[in-house]
Image (cartoon, rainbow, N blue to C red; front, top):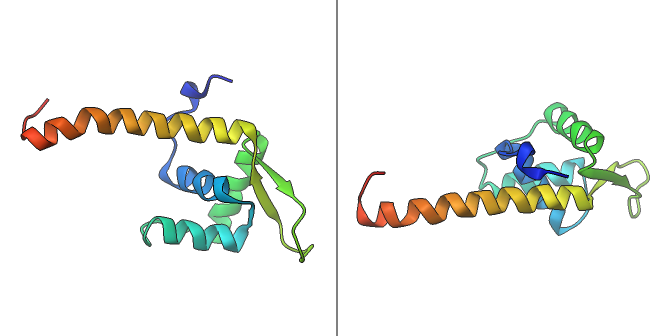
Length: 110
């Protein structure tokens, strides 16, 4: 899979993949984890979350897994492809920051 063609990710997608890299979660758990990780900067409503989850499942980034304890909850886990996309986006962002930080520290444009 050529992950470069999938980048850059929308901030919402990056956060969803990021929280699922820790552990599988159900929808409400994803909403709360994204809110916490973004320091309340990204607030997901259920309709937008499930639209994003459907797309990510279709693209092979996520899979639905059995929920521990409550079979009514839809629980999602990151796949190998999802982890590859997440790692590619983190690498892209790290390279951008590596170029930006020295210029910001020096006060130069460029």
